[in-house]
Length: 342
Length: 286
Image 1 (cartoon, chains in turn orange, red):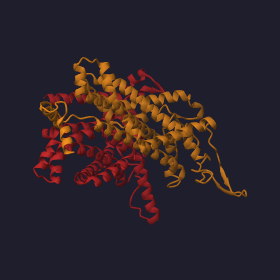
Image 2: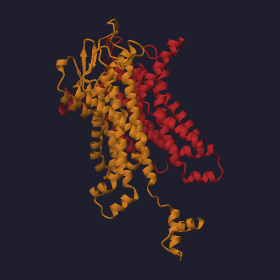
Image 3: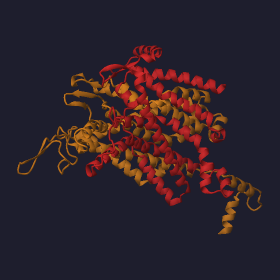
Image 4: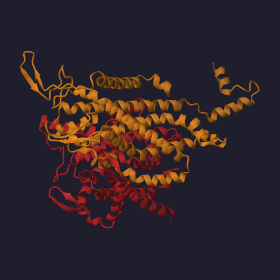
């Protein structure tokens, strides 16, 4: 799988774009102290007033500015590390917890799996965004800036909820996937030969699970991003929402929060504008890149599965025939046939 | 008898789980997890079970407290129309697509797969924004105003929500069905049927499709949450007077409990019907 990915140009293009965006975002934080330029009015060279914020995209402000005059390009660059970091952290957290819960349960009997499925069934009919909204609504909306708690407290709270809400379906998936591998012949042989649970997991199960886990990670990443977007649409921005005189505003301008924040301006002020389009296109491209990355991982995984040597019934028969032949019992018949045809 | 006992037990357990979920908002008090508060919330929810018909909600338009259950009927109807129509259209389109895919040659198959793979990457929310923008653009350029972009309390909106939900689910179905077709294509029963000289269309409709039917149901059942999530977003963005939009604006615990029951029960009945009605021959070893 690794060999296929190393030779895949599309995979590398995705990785390079994501890494560049991350470097730019961290670069802005380190070298510019996370500053975003604020330009309220635009003037011509002779000092004539041209326009006031929100300024449309131009040579000076590539993606224009918002109502407060913030440069949208710089906001997008600054916010990317948050969006990427949050989604990656939540996806990783879900994956680690899912493995810690799912794998031991997968080694148990079929009955426990059945009971778990029944218990989890209730969780699988309620949209996660709705449940997340209900859990966060009372805690993450603040009436004024002075009422906002520490960032670490808000992050811990939100990460806990985002991770835990994704667990039920993920645990069921990991159990199903692991149980499928456990029924494979090599696992049955490993068990028959006396391999303990830990040994079977470490030597046989884990190498087979890793490719699937990389795909699950990407899927969880996209799911988390979509969950953040949906929550911001409902007015719950990442790390909290403050109610100001002008309306609700996010505390951190990451991409999903920017989307929700500017969404109102899409429907109320004008039917479409650059303030709304910038985060929308940004998120669409990020989701597209992540989906592309997932599809390349799936492709590499498929190729790996096809590359694995498969012992066909015909080749067994040919080998048996070779053993009974007097010529050279250790050379398969197919080899003889190939030589003759040459 | 065992089947009935198993299903009854499943329903009872599911009810307890749903009550536990509906009480979850009480677990959090000012960003802290408080188990005592959750316990009180649970007790309240159990208490509510005895007087479900007394649950009320605040009617913003009439500015008064109204009975919940009678008010839910039009909302359920609206949600059901969107959900069932989208599912039926998606299912038919997906089946037609895979029948075309099955009969196609290598070049056409690659083209179809690339196209569906690209389109399936578009999230539901972007279909909503794209469709709304297109309709407004159409109105601005041609003056055509027959397509609604948002519903109101009196007028229901159907076309765009159904279109968006269909677009979201159809690629979801296509992906699964295409993978199944490719997996099943080389199976022995199809080889035998092909060797007997059956046509491709007969192979698909008579032999391949029935074997996939139950698997497809199981796939749909395990992924129904994805469709419901899309429905929630679509109801919210198009201002559809549906069940999910209602719970977004009235997120009290008793209302959540009722909505959870209302969503879970039809799915449970559908499960029962699927297990009873689908012939065993179609289920295979599942």
